[in-house]
Image 1 (tube, rainbow, N blue to C red):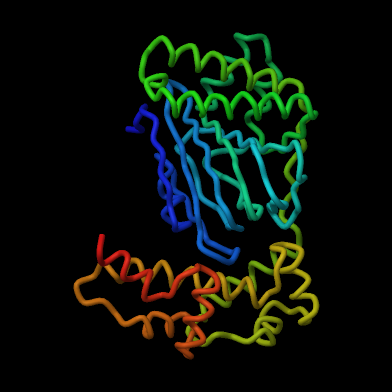
Image 2 (image 1 turned 180 degrees about the horizontal axis):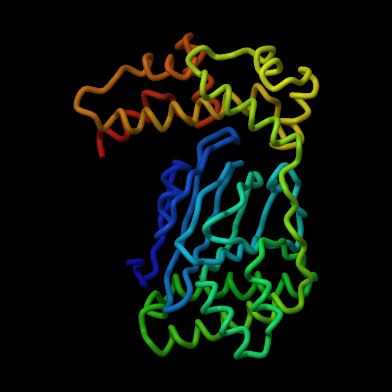
Length: 321
């Protein structure tokens, strides 16, 4: 059961940050360089799960919420652009409405402060009809982008920022029946007004460039031990080196080599964390070699450049927990 009380978790690991969301199955990979810092605030009302997360580097996010849910994502602040399906999302005044069972893969901006409002689709559709917004009842069955006016977006930013400020000061707000009901009613009203006044934009299907980039990445992961070269990947996917580079740049904003290395380094980090808890752990060198990193000092430098710590420090932190 998802707890109703307010909680706040600070994390220095992107994967741990994603796993802190109650009732979700998420995978976060760190793509941006440096020590990760994340904060997650969350609570659950009778019909809403609300959480706010702040992150300080580019992440790749994918996964799902609980069955039957709809997720409305509203950025409070962002530095840089987000990408989904190989498309660059608008930098300002733009939210997302998604099926919780089929969340779009998102590449986040460098810095992000975002609120997610999660609710049961059928329940919210009934609320929309009861409040006199039948079009919204139909809208929530779609995966759409939500472009908003400056005024509407500013109102949402102020509302949710103030809501979390007050809940942090007085956590009992989300536990006491009267305040819970009042807060839920305000959220329903604000969301319905927002969804009824915006003109939704259908989320585009994945670009051909992203499909090719992902095919190359999947092949590289399957054959990570052999660490296939860029030339091998080009032959596998059937495109030129220049085209492959353009596919990664347009889909992920970085070169093929940078993205493929970041993917493998995230895999090493996950294995290091699991391995550190075993009775007879493997050596860091063996784990690194399994993902194609045979030069240990070079690997350690690349790992520290991405995560802000050495692989031995990652393992040591878990052994002392």
